Image (cartoon, rainbow, N blue to C red):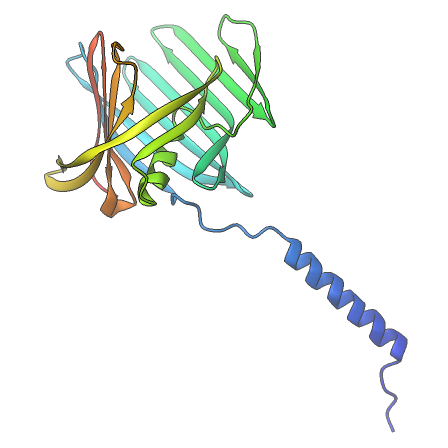
Length: 238
């Protein structure tokens, strides 16, 4: 008759299985992000310039639960690159790092913002480092479009976002103005038009258009300043 498994060995094996199961249960499980990865191409038309500039917006996973968004624009005069590293907290891309780099005509301008917990440190070209508190989760000036996509998808029409930059945190408010059809690459695209709410006497106004049938992809952004109208338009839908 064959010998059975010793009781002590059996208990040890069962204990190890329970511990392993507990470790697996405790391991982080990353759910699908509110906004999926993308790579989109745009054209920029700035007031006072007779030509357009190519721009690219990309969103990709940066490892673990962190995501990276990057916006680049370049032509023969130079290049601008903005980068955001963040983690999703509900519908908010909570920023850990934001970087801005511009070079052209023999000049370089850079800014970086790092947020750890409730402490933010910003550094800018020709400025001393600046520190300030971040009392509530905040996003940044390029990742905020992702927050708008997420909130529009869940049906929000009045949206408030805490936005951090190199100077501090500002609460920005946005409101859905209605629906509008835009022509993108020769095709009519149904969009939701959103306006950033500013002071009545502000010389700057901003509108954004998102496509509900394409995961609320940003289709167009228009900004009007005292120097004119600046337009960023999607070249083709993904």
